[in-house]
Image (tube, rainbow, N blue to C red; front, side, top):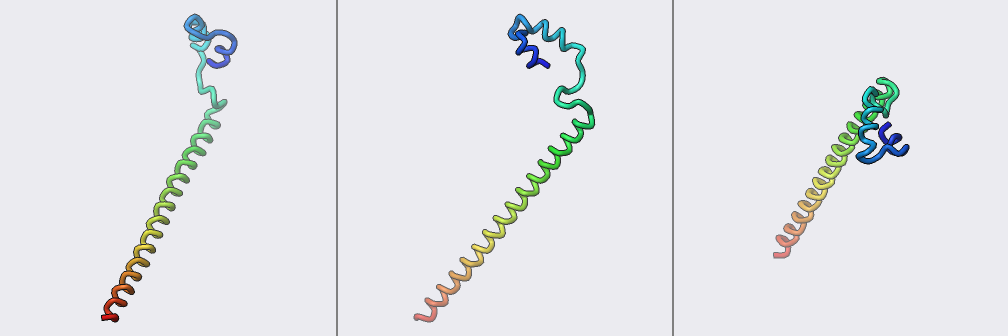
Length: 89
């Protein structure tokens, strides 16, 4: 509602009093017509946040698994190199 009033020319300090007067009795949230719409939006955002957290946890676990596999491969290669030095002597 405030944006609409600004576009109509009630902007700036001179329009502030008029805006306040016109908006004083308004109630509710301008983005949602009903509480049901607001609750659906909140539930959808909650689900998105949970999915993002879950995806971050899966990504972190995948990286940890990759690092572990690389560490095991390094250990095997080091052992093979050490064994090759032992057999040359």
